[in-house]
Structures are given as C-alpha cells and as structure tokens.
Length: 179
Ligand SMILES: [Zn+2]
Image 1 (tube, rainbow, N blue to C red):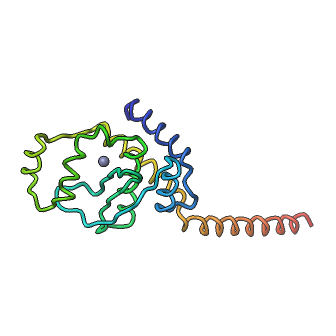
Image 2: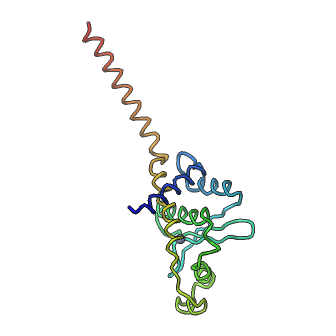
Image 3: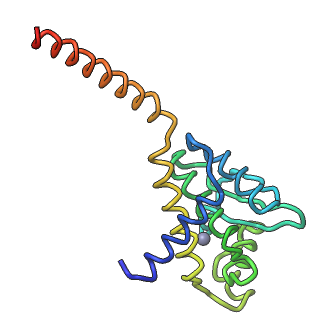
C-alpha cells in the first residue's frame, strides 16, 4: 500500500472518529451524525439509478444535502454507496468535481444518450483523487461497521457469558482438586 494511501486511510479514520458513529452501526444514524457534524441536514433519496449514472450521487441544495442512491441492490451495497457519498460531503468535493454536471444532467434527463450529455458539457472527465478519497472513507466506514453490527453484540455477550460459566466451572473444579 502506497504511503499516500496509508495517510489517506488515517485521515479518514480520524474523520470518522470525529463524526463519532453510533454503536451499533446504523447507516441512517451515521447520516444523522454527519449532518450534525457539518451542521447541515442530509436527505437520503433511494432511486433506481439510470444507466450511465453512478450508484450514488450527492447534490448540495441551498440549505441541505441530498444523497441519491441505488435502491435495487443489497442493503450492504446501499450502505457502501451512502458512505461513499458521505465521503464526498465530508471532503467538500462538489465545487471542484468536474463529473458533477454530467451526473446531474443524467439524473434529470435519464433518457439522454451519454454521448449527447458529454457533447453538451464538452468533456469526459475522471476525477480520480476525489473518488479515491470518497471510496477510502467508505471502506474505513464499512470496516468500522463490520466490527459494530447490532447482531455482533448479543453474540459476544453470549460468548462472554459462556466463558464466565466455563471459568466458574473450572474454579469449582479447582476447589475440588484441592480437597
Ligand atoms: Zn464518487
């Protein structure tokens, strides 16, 4: 892993700690936390995204942010998409994202062929640095989520109880051994 990536991962992990996600993980709670972190509401809009669009898109309104995300996919993938868009919001990418106009055009006019949109906007851009930042934030978030799933908690509690029972049995047995 390149040093640049390691630094970026650390930066994303620091940002996530600042945002202080709710434990156990819940994507809607995370969206609410990011909203309060930036002091600006965020609305999620599930949508069947048309061909040529990314699975998610962030649009900054006057007083709130909107995240469009693909609804025809697994809950886990939806969480990843939303976390990716949150990454764009947190890093403040929109103003300098050359792909943005193209994506909005596709969202508003899904029937327009890609080539027409590209011609109208006069460009076909890739904005790799922004995408890398957003995607790194998404993967750091999903790693945190994996360790903080609601279902994990009862399981670990059950395990703790079992260990307690075992060690108590051993203690009892040791008592016997000393007799
Ligand atoms: Zn993106």
